Length: 322
Image (cartoon, rainbow, N blue to C red; front, side, top):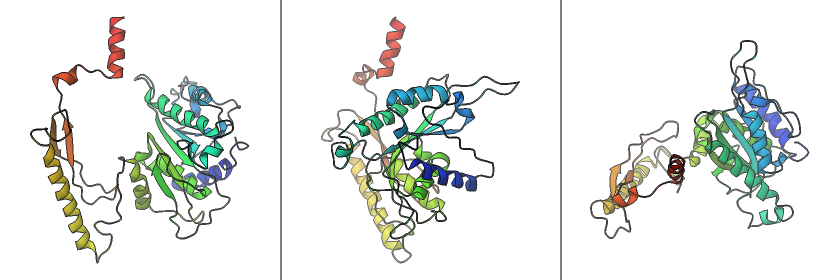
């Protein structure tokens, strides 16, 4: 609903152009207002994009998803329609920070950000609550600030920032927003079943980041990422040897730290016995990782632990007893 979200039109316009440039097949983007007759099954779309600002509340989202996620019957001998397997919800910055300025003021009258937060939680709940008989559904929540009127940027062309959750502030340019959406929809596996925020600009409609840069920006969604240090193999030809030495020091530190948890657990602060094993994660060209080193701490099953049940296990037992 462009009346409720003025930034929707420039984002969708640029998004259409980017999709046409990225794929040889004709990409069709159909837009609907919440009050219109939204087609059952989502017209076999692969991804549905929902602007949270166009919905009234969580129940509005659930009603919308109830229509677009239904399978449609075959027509004239055709195949059964397949609903979207991915729903991307565009929300706003500050939905998790309504106790802080300026978001507390934005939320003061009518609880605007609280309603958006309910919608964010709603899509996650629908995705996680899918039954085995239903089509699996991935979700992505992308939070933007105000959409800037142009793509002008101060500094270099790579001014777009991405972080997990709700941590950033500031505007986002239409080109940057559209590029983030394309990456989240088509290229970045870490964006699936995640919540992220984005801000900043890409200098113009002709300027974009290369694949490695985008992969690096979305890498923070795999984790959580606890610490990022701008140093590593290949960061500088002159400093390569020094950086490799720092990596080796960190590797040895983690190894020695993990030895504290081997054997007797007294003094470790743990009440459950653990096993320490070397991490099996290999290097990843996609993540831009030339070498990995780490440890896994595996909590062992105990007789006491066997008596505890998860919420899903308790529900299954209740069903069996009834």
